[in-house]
Image 1 (cartoon, helix red, strand yellow):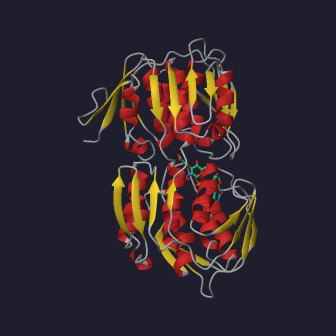
Image 2: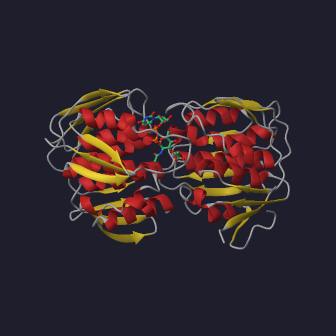
Length: 425
Ligand code: EPU
């Protein structure tokens, strides 16, 4: 029996939600621990399954961990063994590709399963490979296993990425942190998680500059030391709750966030009719009047994030005038729209955009999460739909949203997790 969510829609969300640390920042930081042999304490590690899987990978490789609280952990990777990588576990998440950079940096070699994660069609790693190969690594892929080695050690390089790939930028930073010489990554990803990884490594003694700009420079050092570090708040989790508040016509105060990271999200929400008040570490969102449509186009940071486009879809369905979403990062990120249509949404799909005529009445239905953010979109749709929604395949949502059931019920959502068979299927 796979668990599902029973959502009784139509209740405006009201209250306060604390945003957790960012999954996509915590993942590279956890793999970066392989480079740091000393003890590290990490705080605000989000309690989600992708992070638990990563901790399992590190433990199976020989890391010693002590849980200090649900969100804090002490880890030491002194005894980590590159031959003990649990290959099947690494194939369940995308972030495991970071083992390539970290393994090369610490051991000059590693093997890992082909990374998994959300299914958006093909998810190539050519930019990762080109960057690592230019630093002296060779990479082979055979029988679902990626093997990398640097027979003569890693050396510095200057590389320009074809696309500002988050993963390739992370792998480049990890590989270069302990490599000889100065590595330059041009057209690098600028996401806050890249900045957080650089801040973490610098706190351990690395010499990384330019993170957050298109050009990251890494001067290799001979050793990194332990530290205590707090993971940056999750802009995607925050953006998801902003959308949920607007969709239900509620009022939420979000705490523990970096409003600067949400510029590309706040501005379309305001256009759509939300009132948003921003202070240093808080943000209050309220929507009491009409919802208006808009046009969104995803882009690498600081553009509108692809990881938030699905959560805007229920808003566009309900809006007056409708709108359009152009998806410029992942070609196949509209699978969730088929499920949204089962709830009464109208979505017209083209090659790289989706049109939402708007004016829909969303109604409860039996739907399934297609991926992490698509699942969040259907959850939002369920919260503002008339009647009951049964949302299946919620393991996708659990990969990236810490305590979302408690957080949502605390602000008035009528939502519960059921283990029995879906009744409407
Ligand atoms: N790409 C290539 N070659 C590569 C790498 C990427 O062509 O070698 C292309 C991809 O196919 C895609 C684009 O470049 O079209 C962006 O890929 P990127 O490498 O930036 O993405 P990623 O590192 O695989 C991370 C997040 C994703 C998020 C993207 C974009 C993690 C673990 N994942 O993926 O997060 O969508 O950046 O911001 O950090 C999510 O959290 O729901 C999620 C999917």
